[in-house]
Structures are given as C-alpha cells and as structure tokens.
Image 1: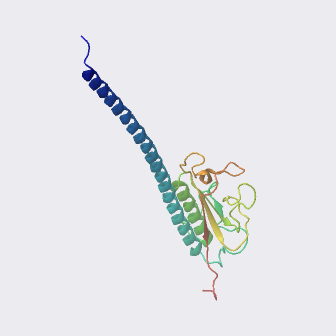
Image 2 (image 1 turned 60 degrees about the horizontal axis):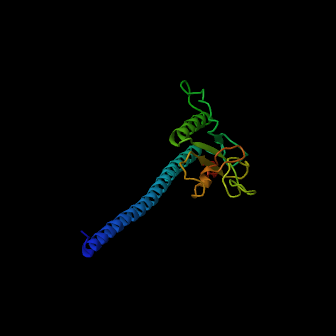
Image 3 (image 1 turned 60 degrees about the vertical axis):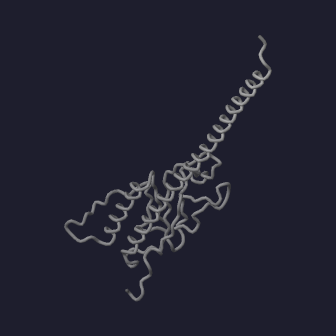
Length: 211
C-alpha cells in the first residue's frame, strides 16, 4: 500500500524540525563555551591584578617602616644624605647576618640599633613577599636608559644623589606572552627578574642648630 503524500510530507517536516533543533542546540553550546572561556580569562586577569595589588601594598608598608628606621637615628650619627653608601644601604638578596651585639649587658649604640633593625626588616621582606627582594641604595636613574630594556627598572644603583630609594621585587603569576604581563617577568643581563616597584625615601632630615 502506497504511503499517502500528506503523511509523508508531515514526517519530512518533522524530521527537518528535529534536525534544526539539534543545530540550534549545538550553536548555543558553542556560544556558551566561548563565553565561558572569555569569563575565565577575565577571572584569571582579575586574580593576577589582585595579587599584584596586595604585594604592592605590602611593599609600600615595608618602605614606610624602613623610612621610620632611618629617621630614628639623627644624621649627626648616621647620615643618609652624604656619601655613596651608609649603614642603611642593603640588598636582601644577600641578607645581612644576625648582629652579634645584642646589647644585653650595655646600652645599644645607634649603629647597633640600626644593624638590628635592618636585619629584622630584611627578614620581613623575605617572609612577606613571595620570592621577595629589596635593594636600598642611592640611585638617580633607577630605570634602564638604553637598549631594548630602556624604561625598565634595574637592580643596579649608581650610588649618587642625596635621596635613598628602595627597589622591590617578588614572584608574580603572569599570563602568557603578549597579554600585557611581559614587563612583570622581564629579566636583566644576569637573568634576574627586574624590580616591580621603586620607592623614594627621604631618610633622616638635616638637623638645624643641633636639634
């Protein structure tokens, strides 16, 4: 018995409708997947930005503390404005040893107090920042001025000028090359990741009339 044309056409339309529904579902799934990939990328970028902000806040707090240490001692004892280096110039990449003078039997001298405070501060840098490093020095040009790295911070100091600076560096989670995070992972000629921040310190102020 031959199929009626009317029933055959209904079945064809129904099959076509089912086929179109499957295509629409697949298209919707592809669009949803692309949206999730974009949202995931935004979330990762947000997490990296939040991590950098937290570490930058910690570094700023550490710089403020170090400034307080320098202002604790008058310039007539240890001046931060004169000479290329002084007791306050350190590199936590090679942290100072624990001072042997503990002032248990006599009062601490200003130099002994500074040595202990600097040692304690360097330990805080290492403990507070992931892979943390800080260099305290005098530097009038903290950025590279020539070559392909021009404009990037450097660890080296020229030991000139009247102001002290702190150069902070730490390990940072970054995206792949080309995502804008390249400067966070840039290395110098010694394969060291460059500093993330440079903060100027005014150190101890010049005394007026012995005050």
